[in-house]
Image (tube, rainbow, N blue to C red; front, side, top):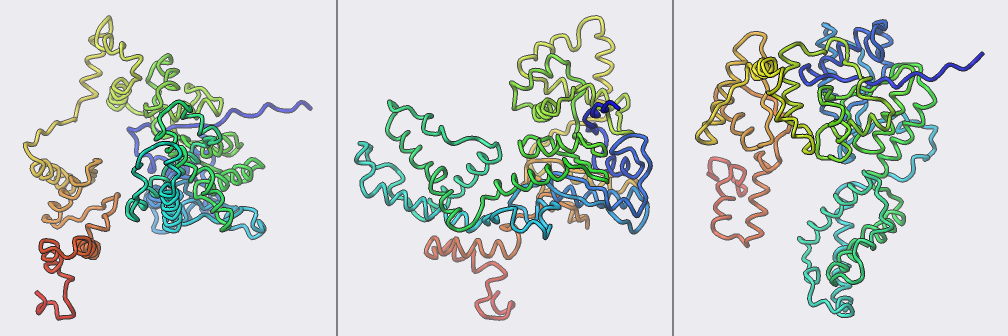
Length: 469
């Protein structure tokens, strides 16, 4: 009997016009994932479904979405794994992590963030000491800035080195040719930079080996590789990866394996299906484009963009489709922006203008004279949404100051909002107090810093709060 050809990778997308996690939960409960038209999972078999999400925050939101879509108070949830940053506690929880039969096959544990920073500080200070011993005199470089490195400066340099190492390991870059970046004829301080980076290329691997530790990114890559190998053997239950774009090579390999499973599926977030094919092919040369990661992932999987279907129930309607078309046109690659000239011209100009009007329908522009007026306007809009039954609203902004101002104004209306970005430690009462203590010590208790410290409500000096005040 001839062998059947392997099935095509199963990849779907949920357009930005549909709520991602709600649509995902609804499709799984309806049996439309990992393949459309499947049987709805039994409440007792649903926990055997494995779902991979990018972050723990998404995992928490998906649990709520399952309870909402199931319309019940209790539900046995699927196994939700996260592929988040390695510095998040338990960010990657795979089957292999807790398998007692591994017998240490996962290798050395990852070094924690604080010990890594302290260890890198010592290496930076040792490098500065080496320069003071006369290493720079041999090159003829006069008094480089690293000679007088203070512990505080070494701490900042250690943090930058840690981030640099994470980026290199995340992208799986070979550092063996690092010295070739700076030819011999270049200035001596450039060569000094390469010598400084030997902390990363030579001394740091030796430190990890001597202490039986591994870098966080290297361990994460090892976990992903083991999980991909485990899944490649096959899984009797559905495996779904959703929300990840596969920009990290290790993640992309895991998604490729999941997409090829007979009962697996990958759900991409907001794949642009409107951009013309020629411009889509250009994305390989435009890594700054928001769709470049997904374009590369589809190329690695061996799947065309046309083969990616919408998750059932998420296909946008007319107005939503017009808005997505406008967003796609706005963010098209720089090399194809000449298409903007024909976007509203030609034979279809009337239809194009009608679609543009539909895309802009419902969008309002508020020009606030000051930042305080801006926050007040947003707070009033959110309050109006809350007072309308069945209506929800969200503020999306990278401006943390604006978010705090809006939250403060909503508290005046007795409304408490969920700030998904969290509250910085310095903005909490204990955190602000510790910040003032450090500021006073750093300035040797200068009058302004000392007065600010004494005015804080936690400054009691061993007295009753009222007496201290």
